[in-house]
Length: 76
Figure 1 (cartoon, rainbow, N blue to C red):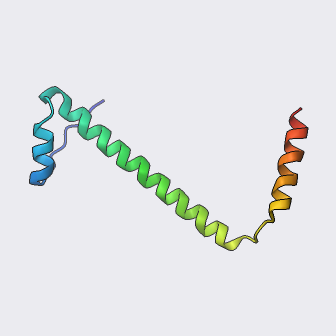
Figure 2: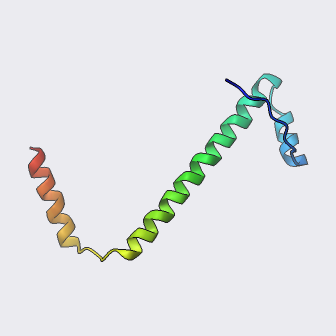
Figure 3: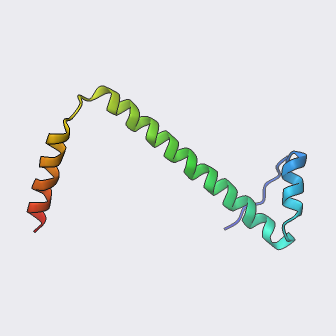
């Protein structure tokens, strides 16, 4: 279900939107907002992982390699 909204656009955004066909404007705005929101969610998730990574102790390459080998052997 769609929702009608009233927003203010600066001249640059308005001119870009004017270049779109009238039937495509809502799709363009909706896609842009959706893409912006997904990017924002990814950035927040990455920041949370960075904060968590800073709190955890480091892991040696040797440990990682052995864990991967163990996991591969378990899957066979």
